[in-house]
Image (cartoon, rainbow, N blue to C red):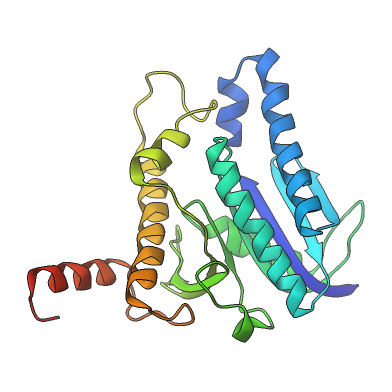
Length: 236
């Protein structure tokens, strides 16, 4: 086994894309995803990429520069993927793994477990090495990452330029993710809300000069409450 950083990314709603897209257009949708991941891999110097259906594996060595490259890669996947109605959810871990026809190991398991329980368009990381120099409003931000289950817990989350609510909802309904005329289900609405709330928090940090390395409280609703109290002149 070798040791380094490991990224797992899933395309959210891929089964809907497959079932809702006409066969003569489906191949292009799949090619768009592969081309995007490969092109961004070249841009960020990520040489190890592996596709398994709608899941993408990526790996780098374990130095600080490698973590920052993988975070930048994930950031671009989030932004450009959503713009193409290929929303992604992922996780970055650090540890031992075997890379090959069968890729496996503790780092793969950790990334898979964290990725699978998240409930948004986003990428979180386990508490990996070199975090002390990786915090920033365009890298990693400490955040109570929304999950389907488990306790509320703070994770480093990849910071990215989240669109406004209307645009995020629009991108999550196009490209075969929903059928024409289909109403937005609560499962999708929660993802939109959780994703946009993270974008609001990033803007809040930018406005207030807050630290990317810490989060006060348990819920992002608390920072919205602070903003409302400040706007109304109420005591916190």
